[in-house]
Image 1 (tube, rainbow, N blue to C red):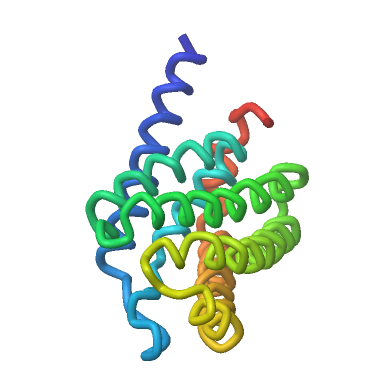
Image 2: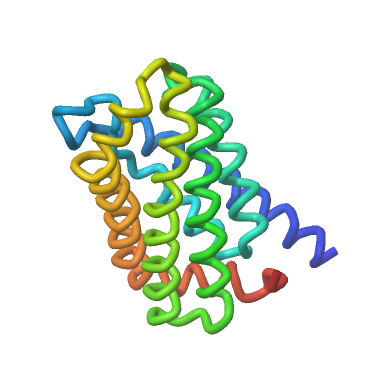
Length: 188
């Protein structure tokens, strides 16, 4: 009975985090670079990182996939399936790397290290993803290449490292809750 209760609790928490991710994507969304107003910062990745901290990388990745799909057909409908793929790869890498490192020790230092490595990996991953997928929107590859260093790389660094900072700052006040719900979660 306790196992079933834990499963229901996990699904409720994951559902709430997915809903929060979508809400943050709707309400905390703004362009950073005037040269590329279509590149908008959003805070939707933060609850996804919490999901991965609580329940492990594969649960975090599953919630990421669900929220990416919902966002692709609602909030980010203009980016379509291409945006869905890019978002899933970049945020999925971030969530998996961050949680694999954090779940080993579950300390603030492990969280910080995981967030920094996840942000770095996702920022780097967005370079080939933009070179491969952005031309599918009809933007010549030469234009994408010229935008890499002055716009695309800094935008992704700001987004991923900014979300990492917010996650890290929120982790401390919520640490007791995170550890309470995450302590019985199976390690993956």
